[in-house]
Length: 291
Image 1 (cartoon, rainbow, N blue to C red):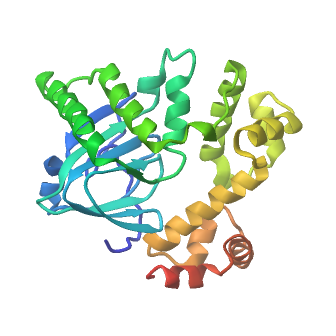
Image 2: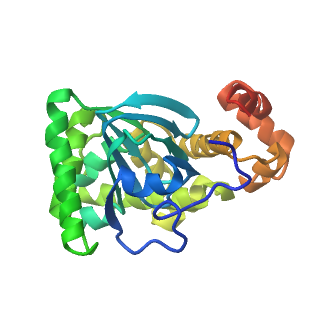
């Protein structure tokens, strides 16, 4: 799992092109990993969530700068834009569900599934699956794959994919982390998240985000703080730092180039910004993570 000069982005690993609208796809771990000698190199999926279900066997997972060695049964939640890589073996059994959340949440007037997905995919990482739950979850994945294959790899039944995600979201036990919202607040917050992801590297001021959303800066900050406990500016800085950490670990590029790619005109200022948030400079951070 060596660092690359560029971090590839795929809809499905190894496949070029723009992902289909409202993508919903499932496959076995073996189906794709065997082609690549059981090693999935570091890559990202923009706008797509992934749920990896490891029923049995080992995996070494890289999720951003975290390295995890695990044995099945184990699930992994991978939010959009998370740099990730996996090393499996022929003994690794399970499935991978890749989806555009819009494919599953349209028509969800109460936003119950949307809230569950937000909790499940709040951070990239493992979800513990007790042994007595593993057989039921594996059965759901197998039925989902069978339906996919029976339809000649046509559209997946959304209700069945939702059943898989509900079960894993329940196992994640994060229900208390996100408060209920009204429909208007949910719409504004979702639009803010999409805007922030699209423009955080441009270093927009908070007022520009607010103007695009038709809100005052004060109202935008109140809404975001109610959802996350942090200010808009703090979240934008956290997103820049998270992307910087990701690139320092996974991309073989000079620190100055990473600074420019993240919208910093002065690499020295980027180094100070990074150290203020992380506690060490970018070169020290890269060295500590094997760079």
